[in-house]
Image (cartoon, rainbow, N blue to C red; front, top):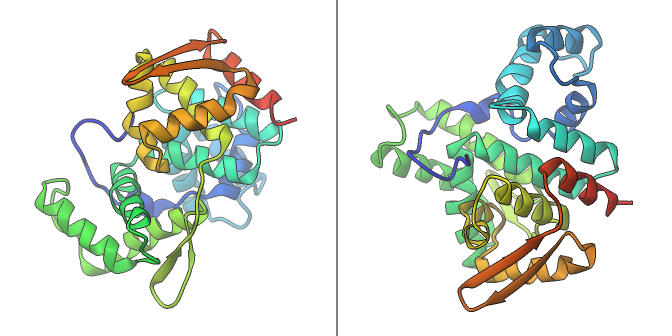
Length: 268
């Protein structure tokens, strides 16, 4: 299930790494399905796949970032993203997919993107800052999402991690001081197609797919999503029919693996 549903639990997980796009791509390329995680970590370290990363840092990235985001409860996200990366997934689309996977396993990141970044974007604000993140933490504490308040130094570190993730995702860029400039952003076609199928194969109804909270990570309301799906009709992955509140979809593939292969074929 997505991090956007159920009881919220804010942690310092983002301190272990923002999106880590180059590292994620390197680990996906080296990862072998079914490999023991400890053996994988040792191989990553011995082969220097993360550059000059220390043993401790390698352990953190492999176990607390990569495995958490892509291998648990199963390795379906890792298989899908590796296949798409191998088939030439554009950097923008790859970042979208990593943001989706990372946010689903981190309530703090999920809610900050959906509840702070996108409202600021919609309001026409020009910047997002560390202070915005600190205010968000305070709200989370009063809502009971943090077991206890974080120290000032920890809060600043986490805030930088959140802003770093948004910057890697292409939603903000460096500005003056602690501020980051909010930029024009449009979710990639690959992300839209992938997430449509992913939600469908979770067993959701067609209407529920289009109304799911995960779309709030990418600023896509139901109506905007329908418009994007219509734009993807030339990909021939699905057929969407909509009238008022009713959405019906003819899904052209019977498994997520098959859908991912077909999405990858559109990258050629």
